[in-house]
Length: 233
Image (tube, rainbow, N blue to C red; front, top):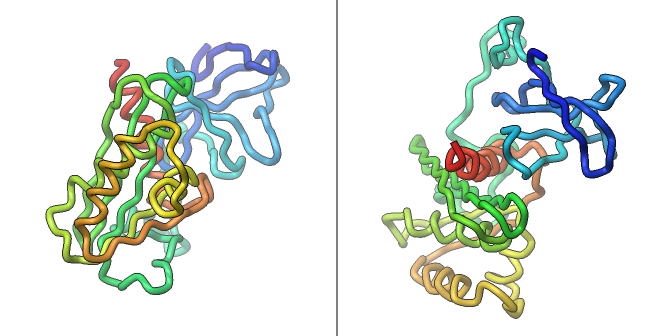
């Protein structure tokens, strides 16, 4: 069947995976037996790769059909020009007290199975400069992947004197690194990250909502998933 593939959900609903697009990327959308999107609390279920077990529930209106030739389309602005990814975060302002010229970092981790194949995604932005990192981490937990993404991001910064704002959607990361939560697991990893953090003159960790339309947070999530899927190819 072109553009779709049959499967069965954990909820035992028979459905098909239909090729769609989400945030400028091709994805697979779960469809019920009556050819309507599988929906839960206003969100639909997607995968970036049919072989992965890691899935996402995203807002239904953010998943749209591909172009007539099966290509990803770019929404047009009111003036008719195509949209373009900015080098600056579009929907997450700097936290009060963080300098406007801070290096901005978005991190995310993903684990298919928890524990299972895992990946880390990082977006680093400073002025007009932008760097994206997608890395396969082997088999580990989602929490470890979230922490490792932070570790990777900090290790890529060549300066420790400029202010840094690091955004994560992981409550676990925020709790372990800024709120004094006691580590039952990942102790050595947490200790290493705290050692890295101490090197910076100004470093602020900021909690953001996951899958809430924050462009660079969504991109970090995609990079984490790509780390897993690219390793399986």
